[in-house]
Every structure is written in structure tokens, then in C-alpha cells.
Image (cartoon, rainbow over all chains, first blue to last red; front, side):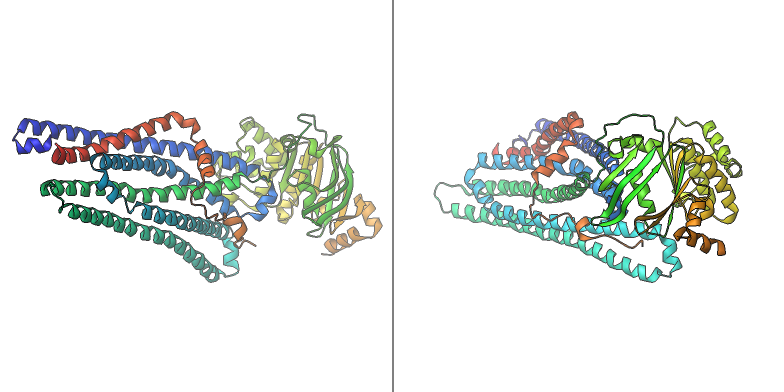
Length: 535
Length: 67
């Protein structure tokens, strides 16, 4: 072939083989392009599906899970940990497979040509396997630590940027920067550890490659003494096997690199799967899948603890007829908001029964409950989106006209029309472009358009200034009209018209009755009333 | 308070010491099932590429030393 064409000058033959080689190299380039492209397409599709599953799973987790797991950690799982899984397909698995094939090809050729020389060359391979095994363990541990540090970094940045005003108010910039410096330093060290393991392995491969060559040379030198062996043949075999050694160790070197990627993907995916395997969902063993909600509610001997055995609700009993309004008052930590958490099925109660329209709450489909119960919280969360989208929450069945009508009913239409783009005004992150009262009004419209049978207002008026209070009060009256309502409020002026008021203390009901009844009791409610009105 | 709440139980997935977790690997692979045709194509391409990449080297060795 090439050799014969040069030895016996044959320009035509040489040109032929040159064209063949160029053709092969071109095919390799085209093949490489498709290989890379397809690998990335598979990787990106896989992480798209995985991310979708993870996000869906996270949103279905019960609130208790979020009490103990930082948001920054979940962000890391859903964004950067998943990203490493894509690399398993695009840079890891397929390329490892290719490298193994190349390695197998070289070994077969070596054994076919000269099995004795081939055996000499592969003597260091067992050492390589042991080194690779140690490397794999070290790199896995290093990657796990690196991913943990990435997660810690994300959590820290996320929490501190969310609470940036606290950092500034308390002048903690330097202290927090110092804390960040430590976390950042651990992050760096974790990455350096993985680089260290990698850096140690590569020279080992080079040393073993040199050892193969040395063994080859020693063996061929020993053959020189044998009779009937031509020196030129041995020289040719030496050069040929030198090339084979290079061809064998090249994929081995690359394999270490690919294995890095694969291991990183495995570590990332194990962390993603750990979240996916979390069984922290509220069990939906619903027997009642559809029903017309009237709003009849009864709590019977209900006991509840966020962490057993510390009960935050003890033996709670009360009932509410459709269309009635009940109010809860009491000091912070008395258990008022826990009642709402149970009714919305954010948490599970341990003892007793909650009956809604004749059915035990646990037997009613969660979606059915959530479609009929609306909660307006003190701290209104608005997305960085338009006023309209913040009201509809992306529900296309709620028309713009319906939203405008609801805003008029609640008394918020005028303020929305005064905004630059009216209903299309982008409210900024967490609704930062609006005042607290305006944000609260938007949350009222949100509740109004969903037309729930049961309405819960959890200290919805606590942060409102006196000017907005009247507007909010009117909105509340409109909202509670004709529907069962539960109001938690510190300001007694907002609940005095309620059908029933329950006073709570340390998880227990200590007084209940109408505003006048409670005043005449001259107990805890009267004391609260006196404190507020003396002010 | 908003300060970092990370604890080692939540964060650190257990270091098993196992260098290769076959169960985990197959679980990752299960996500590629909807794209199995692409996977088959990519594996076939890997085979072809392994051969095409190696041929020039073998040409050289065979042509120079073994002809």
C-alpha cells in the first residue's frame, strides 16, 4: 500500500491512497458533527423531561417540606444539578462507548499481529485498573462535596438577596460578606479536591504508558540474541507497537476525562432523584371527587402538631354555617394560622375530624378543596408580571372583562387605571412597584375572580395604612358577602361584625361568641378591646 | 430569620463509597427511553466513528510495516 507505493515509485497509487485517507478524515469530521449534535439533543431532551418532573414534584410537596429544606438547595437541584445529567449523554456515555471500542480495536490488532508483544504491552493494565478504581471513588467523593458547596452557595446568595433589606437595616454587610467568604472558600476547596484527584490520575496513566514502552523495548532487546531473528523486523515491530501503545493510552487518557463527566452526572442525578423520591405529599385518598361546596365547616376535637408531640392546636371545636363569618383573635403563636393551614390541607392534623359539607376533609379531593377555598395572606406574593396575569394566575378561562368587573366590585379599578399601563402594568419582583395596600387589593381581586365558597383572610389587613384601611374594609365586606369566611385579624375593628369570634391562647379556644357577647364576658377579648381602643 | 439553614443531613447525599451505581445509571437511562431512536442512531454512529477514526492509523501501520 502506502509503503509499497513509495518503495516502488507509484504516483498514481500514492494519490489514490491520499484521496482515500482524505475521504476518511472528511467522513470522520462529518460523523463527529452528527455525533456531538445528537448527543446534545438527547441530553437536552432528557433534562427537559427530568426538570419538568422535578418541578411538578416540588410544587406538590407539602409545606412542611419547605420548612426544613432551603429554597436555594431546591433551586440548585432544579437548575445546575440537572444540567450535569445532560453531560452524561452529550459528553459522557456515548464518547466512553466510542473510546472503549477504539481500545478494543487496538487490543485485537496487537494480539493478531504479535500476541507476545501484546502481552508485554498490557502488563501495566492491572495497575491502571486499580488506579482507576481509586480515582473513581476519590472523584465521586470530591464531586459530591463540590455539589454540596454549590448548593450552599446558592442558598446563601438566594436567602441574603431576598432579605437584603434586613442585611442593610441591621448593617450586617461586612459580617455577611465574611460568612460568604467562608462558604466561597469551601466551594473553592471542594473543586480543587476534584481537580487534585484528576491531576494525580493523569501522570499515572503517562507513567504506565512509559512502562509499557519500556517492557516492549526490554522484550525486543532480549529477542536480538535469538538466532534467525532479523534486526530490521524487530525494529519494524518496535516502531509499530510504539504506535499501538500511543493508540491504546490515548482513549484511556480520554476515558478518565469522560468518566469525570459521567461521575458528575451521576452525583447530580442522585441528588435530583433524592428530591424526586421524597414522599412528602399530602395523601390524596379522596372518596369525594366532585361536589357542590356550600361552606358548612365543623372542627371536632382537632389536635395538630407541626412536630409531634408539641401540639399547636389542642382540642379545637367550632362550627360554621354556609355564608357565616367567623373571626379568630389571639396573640402571635396562639394557633390561628394553623387552623387555616389545616382547612387548606397544607398540613395534616393528627387527631379529630374536620367536616366540610358533611364529608371528612381528608376524603375530599385536594384540588376540589383548593378550587373552593381561597386564602388571602398578610404578605401578598406577586409575580414579576402584569396586574392582569397576577390576578388570573395564567388561567385563560378568566377574561379581562371578568377581572375588570371584579376590580370594580372590590373597589380597586380606579387605582389600577391610574397605573401607567393599567391592567398591563408590570408590578416588578414581588410586586415591588406597588404599595402594600395596592398589593393587598390585587390579592382580593384574585380571590374574588376565583369565586370560592370558603374565603380565608389571614391577617390581610395587618400591614395596611389607615388611608387604605377604609378601602380594604369595603373590599372585605364585598368579598365575604354570601360566602363562608374565616378572618384572622389583630385589628378588632375589622372583625366586630363577624357572626362569631373565637379567642385563642396557646393552641386552645378560651372564649367564643359575638362581639357584644365577648365584651360582656369581660375576659381576654375585652382586655384586647380595651388595649386597642385606649390607643 | 433568613440566614443559611443548610444542614448536613439535607445537603450531603450519602457517600456510599461505591464508585459505580448501576441502579442509578439505569434510572438515568430510563429518561432516554422516549428518545431511543436517537440513542440507537448515536450508538450506531459511535461504532462507525470508532472504525473511521482508527482506519487511517491502521492504514499507516499496515501499509508501512506489514505490506
